[in-house]
Image 1: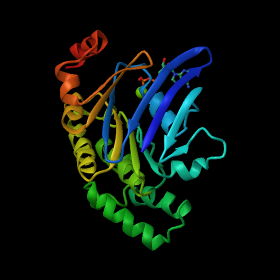
Image 2 (image 1 turned 60 degrees about the vertical axis):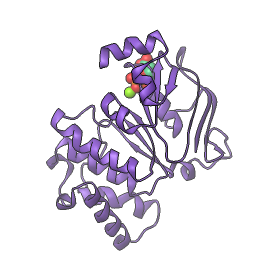
Image 3 (image 1 turned 90 degrees about the vertical axis):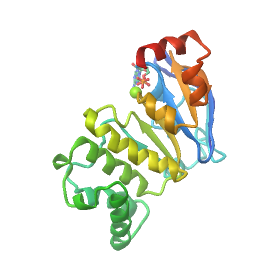
Image 4 (image 1 turned 120 degrees about the vertical axis):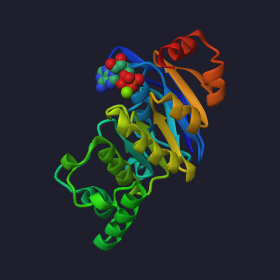
Length: 240
Ligand code: ADP
Ligand code: MG
């Protein structure tokens, strides 16, 4: 499981996360919501050490990420990350985007990597697109390739940072459907999202960040129907 313990993060004199503690257990789907600038991305990035916490600890399966003795590459290999802007390799085909890291990092043979990649492309509905380059794919297709690419490393956790925010509205659903099916398969997921309907339907828990603080943490039904704080109420009035 992922355990965030009293995490704070500052950029210079700007403190953007304040004493965050949260746990994500195996199989949990956690939606992280909150206003722009509230620290959602920074929190996710601290979980796989793309940002180094200023204070506090992050534990992944009992290993302290901030301990210098921890093998970060080893721990990070357990965590797949999907970004708002896809970050695909532009000069690789969809298939090559999926086979690159498993061959390079996990030492899979080309045959093994290709076979896994094809299965995953099929899973996200893109088996016909394996030879396309990213610039020939729609936003929704690119994001589905990005999700499949993360899954190709067989992660135990998946972190999503606003995976549908850069998409045209008609492509949001195809990506959410892939994420929903992944959640249904038991994947442990943390998802920063503005899709409140999705959070409500798919998440086990909603974490509401405001001003760098974890202000509320509750099951979706409770959070959306009866938010406890004025800050959450004000946020929900704007987005619902
Ligand atoms: P969110 O994802 O909720 O919109 P972010 O985590 O991106 O929020 O940002 C939280 C705050 O941290 C913002 O004030 C942002 O400007 C600041 N911030 C984020 N990354 C950096 C950085 N690398 N250097 C300085 N400030 C940053
Ligand atoms: Mg963000």
